[in-house]
Image 1 (cartoon, rainbow, N blue to C red):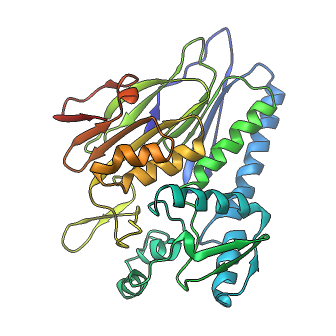
Image 2: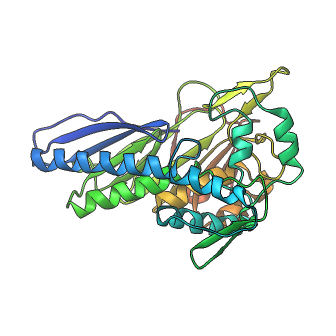
Length: 331
């Protein structure tokens, strides 16, 4: 999770802030503008956009995605129409599923739900075991002429690892269309910034996954996003006191085990969102290769053993705040 440094008003410009509760998180937007009426209209337009996308992309509440998932399994191997509002996310998911060699896999929505993270319920171990025998992939979803069919009865799309990035990208586009040149969007610690704050870069902090506090800080360049995926927010301890968190490894059908957090810096928030989750699932020996396949130059991966795997370019941008990382691997 990324934290944004405190924002204060000053005489030369007005900073306006608005919060929204969507996608299961607080989306905080701060922008610099002088026209109050234009700002109010902009915040109203963002609210409308987010409500619409929430209804369209939510995996387990009534809406476009739930209807599409149900249609796919109602008559397996029969084609159903792809809703236009889902087409981009589906195409993007198939593209990065391929690039990541299957690590990025939004087809496992049913498996994620079986682990109990949607409704905060105990895991359905019988259903999990059944799905693990034939874990669905995006290769099981065939597309042709705006039609789709599923080859796997367990396939259920869940865009939780990309929808936030797409929403942030659309909010940023809306703000720029309204000629707002300086803003920062913080969606539960995932951030996109444009311009600057009073002639200084927007400053962000990377949360420490091992204890309360901050592990590093950096100045976020303009038109840049920073996303973190981690196992320290949404989790529970099972009967053996093993951490069970919401990032499911599509190879095993189990919560991932090796990595505590992965932070990615990229100009495109969609790619940053996808890459942060994918690096959470990568073997430590494959982190650099996986990042390269996804087009990521700046990354910081923290393991359960409190080791840091960090790209040289990222290392040049961050300032360490904690000294507990005894072993830093430069990649």
